[in-house]
Image (tube, rainbow, N blue to C red; front, top):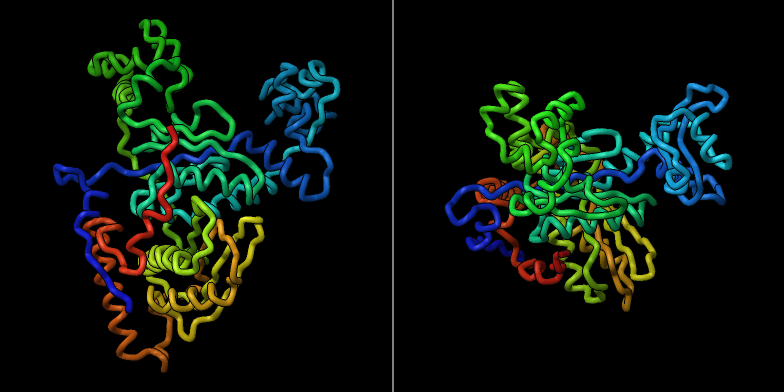
Length: 425
């Protein structure tokens, strides 16, 4: 049986005790030393025996041109005194055994796109802030998990699947998430919530405040404003008088105030998927089916929001030995029905899973997408599928109004207990 249960208690997931909509859930993902890391990963894939991240190395232009500059440097090069933006000639004087690799923006775009594709498995609302950093709005995509756990999953998957590391900032707005990701590096996850601002942000030099122009810094120093905390405690009207509208903005930023939205592309995706790394290996097929249902429900919810139908379903498993297994199957008719796509996903799981397997990751993805209005009516579509479509639409409307977790399926009632991880300190 396939039941739907409205759970009013989950309303608190999206509304606070005063009935106000809860704060957004934002991540900022920033690649550590992107150009050098991406080049290193690509060189290793091409058969190089040297990881340029582990030796004195830089990314730069043509060494024969004395005007070529250092775009990125390894830690070993930094230890030699090499600095970003100095000439390659100067860098070579400091570090005679320096390895120089020419910049290649084709490689950078390739790995930037790979990161973006991975992040799309967590949310559709992604702002590519630059080639090596993204903002993610996770507000409606947590699946009863916590934002910090999603950050840990992303960090781990980027390292294991793409070969480089990221810093991730965790907060309720873009500004604080961005500031958090710039704390100690590399390969770190940092939170910066409103109550943490005095301890974590106000002690920083004023020059580290996001969006503060270089010309403004010395003017603030002349006013004896040396730290972000100093700025936060200034009179807002005084700052407006001296700096205009920019003065109001920097005062708000110093106090952690930012209402800007994550500006994401609203183009139709080529596929929609989601996966989860499990907190402990699972061999129980019933539990795997529950997790698969939770993943399918979110995938189909996103599919319907795009007004798309899927023709193909793919299920991925990763064993405790890190062996990846995936099966895909065609649907009889293009659909966005949670029930029909789950039935196909469950069938694929049964085909893939061998008794005794311990699973550490499970994922589901739908592909071969078509616009609903472009899809011809099929002989396989009947009154039952029409009822299911109306039911899914009604559920979506409840989710939009009360929050994604305000309604859930009986088959995944206990999924939160399976996926729940401890928060990091």
